[in-house]
View 1: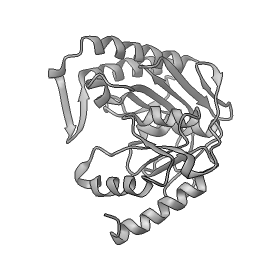
View 2: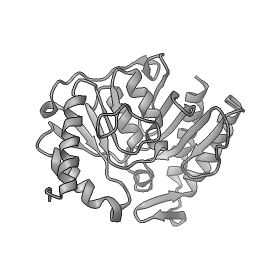
View 3: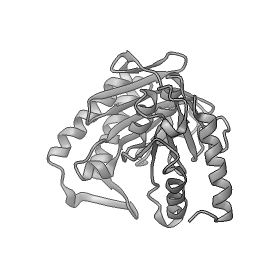
Length: 264
């Protein structure tokens, strides 16, 4: 797939740049939300390649170097998901690309540049990792499930909510992890390495590719209330599908408690 090749080339660029990375050129978009010259250069390279693949498509990009207007198709691009990991020489960080219309996601590619793993899927075509089919894990209960929870960068707005989310699932799930890259976490749900993933506030460039990869791998994605996931939502429950109803019931309970401020 040409999109996989573009993602891989961008990932190779990230690995090369990491070896000579200039930490003095890090910018802070918001508190605890960073961008570097590498993010911007990677986005420019990726956009250039995607334009060759589908010239008529618009773009939605995290760094805002290209934009959509009235196009039928849009590329949704995160050239470096896991910037904080990248800055600190930590794992993982990835390239995420999705192609969507106003109503649906048509394909998604997530390239974990630190593991040389390319996850991809297209509508009704299945999900793959390095050309091998993948499917979700079939853990049947939350108390045996491995969940991933991520923390929004916007501490002032979401710290209380995020801490309550951890408090709610800690001890109810078989295990909880955070990896610093939403895209990679979603890919791992699709590949059966994680059973579920929950985040309260997230940009759609972070999850768009993962959404279709999970669905094509047999999993499920909804909002916190269990509504079939809208591609412009920001509250996400993604799972293997088997434990999804139970996860949503937990998030519903959590929502009610959070609203009443009974969790501390």
